[in-house]
Length: 321
Image (cartoon, rainbow, N blue to C red; front, side):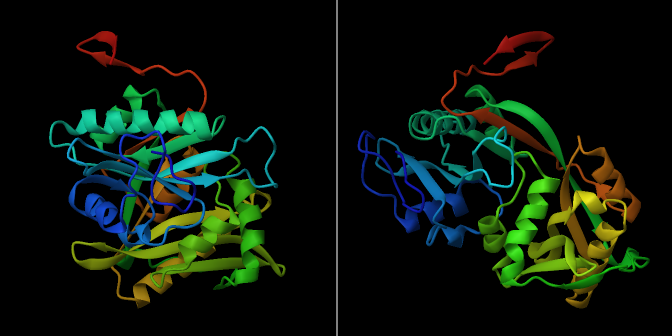
């Protein structure tokens, strides 16, 4: 069931060793219970070189579940205490006989492969879907944080004025931007050069850089997403060099992004923020963003280590799944 980065399927010891076709995977991620983070289903046809796509088949030889994983080594700019990581980019299951049970079964198989092939890596994912959260907790993931979803109406964001020079990012900027990101997000949330390049490539994406004294002070990555049939703005990342916090860099970046979205005819902008990051939440609230009832659970585990189902409370009793 194991896939090397960039391959389709999966392992010599799996019950069904035939590769999962792009058609099978696209159908699974488009028409069934699925969770996708930061990639369109079309990306399954030509996955990046550091992706692994793990799948399993049911008794009828259909692809019954699949997980899209991004395998990343720790950037050299980060200390050795930061582990190499695996990020869950997507999970899909058919689940005709029980979606939570199907998710649990898939994740157990995925973890079994990862424990053997990629031990000692931090594996994390975030989802607002109960079936996936429950499936992850049942296989030994732990809740790490909660991610809030915030929105704002663009016509109300009229008082933003950039105080820094803004420009579109150039390919030669990416290593420096990745280094800034590593300093600003020293845990498992950092983006490397390859990830920044992947996310900024689509035509719907825009990567803006704020300059201070001729050096990059931060960046903002946005994309256009469809909501209710209309293109709206989504902020994938706002990142400011920690040495320049509280210098107005974040406000300048948001001002530039909002101006671009408004000119493109968008009316709303949304983003995610961790509830544990109180300073960032306060910044977004000052700009007028409002939290919506779409929080996601951030879950994680370490491969190759013993794990047990997470306890949960049921009718006042602490019990295990």
